[in-house]
Structure formats: structure tokens, C-alpha cells
Length: 245
Image (tube, rainbow, N blue to C red; front, side):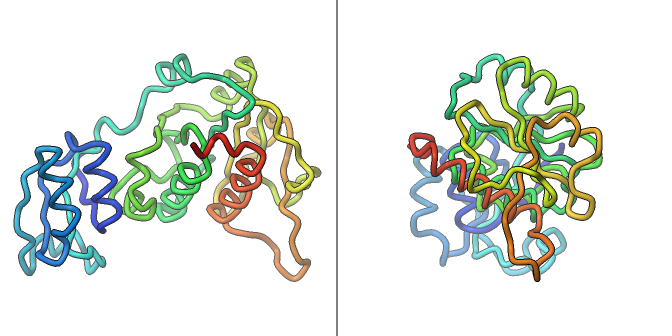
């Protein structure tokens, strides 16, 4: 991944707080100086003026709130083997795997929910999947810089490896035979989120230990991928409040 444009005050604050070394250029308008300038100075990041028309094509009309950074994303994806070897495995551990989620706004929202509800990482495959970009970072409200983002080559092989390590695999599926509110999350958990249109791939579905269903009114067919992930992670987190510390 080359450099990308990150924008918005929350995203920039998270970037400066967690990964100031990734910032190649930081542009702030006078209206965005308060708070952000202090963080930038403390992290040794040089501030450049945000002038009218700057990065016009790259921002493409985005609401940047006077805070924009050009950031290197090349190292944001952690190596799976290195991550999983160092990751403690406890009943209060949760991971999220994306299974061909192609909308970058959904990817960003899922990352935000994972960070907000205490998951340990988001695992993202290299194929048929929206990559981490500026749009994803913005949609995640900067949490893409505060939770490990782990690259994987094959979801099914990764799931099999995680099973060997003691994780219980939950697939999010509208036709699942386990209702989310009734589930007891007493083992290390992996939540697999399928694509927006087709849901979980058939082979991935077969590898899941449990298919979770969110009870809903009959008049509503389903929730989108990011909302389903948020509801599920909230239910898991309610049983593991220490994960929010």
C-alpha cells in the first residue's frame, strides 16, 4: 500500500496519538488547530497550512473538518503469524474476520465496532476484500490506528489454525440456528462477517462452529454487515466487560 489521505478531526487525533511516525504531511486549518496542534507538537509532527483547494482531487469534496494528513499505510497490516503467536488466548479474547466485505465504509465501521467493544484485532484477507484506505480510516473514526489490523491470505485456513489454538468460530448468518441473545460466550471467540450481498461463503460457513442469528421483526429481512457486527460485538462485550478496560 502506498500513502493515502486521512481526514477528519477524530481520525487525525487517533493517527497522531497512535502512529505519528506514519504521518508524511499534516495539514491543519486554523479552525482545527485547537487540540490537534498540541498533539502534533508533542509527537514531533510538523504542521503545514490547510489552504483552499489543497488536495482538491484527492479529497473529492469530502468533509475534512480542516484536518488532513497524507499517511503511509504500507505497514499498517500486521503479519498474521507474528500477531497470533504473541496474542494471549483467554475466554475474554475476541477476533473479527472479514469474509469478502467489499464496501470500505462497512469495513471502517466494523473496525470501529471491534475497537469500541474490546475485540483484540480485525483480520482482513488479501483477496475479494476492500483494502484499508483513507475511506476506511475515516469511516473507522481513526480506530484503524488503535486496534491491530492483521493481514491473512486465506480465511478458511486461518479459521482452521485458530480452531487449533482454542478459538470458537461464530459465523454471522441470518439463518443461523443459534440466537445471539441466548449465546454464552465462555471461550475465545472469532466472529466471521460475510459480504454485503451474499453473506458468508459456503466453505467458510462450513468451518464455523456456530452460526449466530440476530432475532428481528419478520418485516425486516436483515441488517447490513457492519450493523450485524456491531450488534454481535456488543452482545459479546456485555459478557466480557473487562475487555473494555
